[in-house]
Amino acid sequence: MYERILLPTDGSESADAALDHALDLARQYDAELLVLHVVSAAYAEAGPGHANAIGALEEYGEETFDEIAERAEAAGVRMTSEQRHGEPHQVITEYATEAGADLVVMGTHGRTGLQRYLLGSVTERVVRTSDVPVLTVRYEGEDEE
Image (cartoon, rainbow, N blue to C red; front, side, top):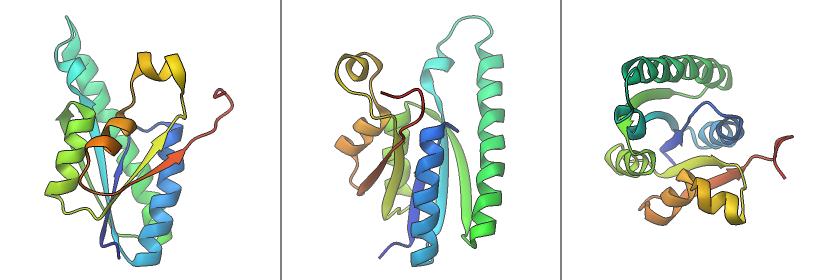
């Protein structure tokens, strides 16, 4: 059923919760896990020092890949990773199609109301615009209400 499962990650706890589900599905279906980290286009347009911020985000992405690779190996799951720049929801939906993903697994903070309206939601935008099915995993951390 699934040959390629895409896990977009920003290294957050909600993305980590989604990783658990993605690894489980990849193991069950002997699927490849595609891990994507997007450096937001907003940083490319920032003022002085933006190059340092972009570099730090790229480095953080690589560190996140290393951590996920360890967990994937321990689970016996094949994994590839890629880092791209752009508007996160657009990059994720484009990459899902381009890479031939059968499923996108994403974390969500479960924000509602005004907080969701003001902050927006990459996951929500991916759900609305993706041609590939999207499984959302709600993270219910200590700081979430």
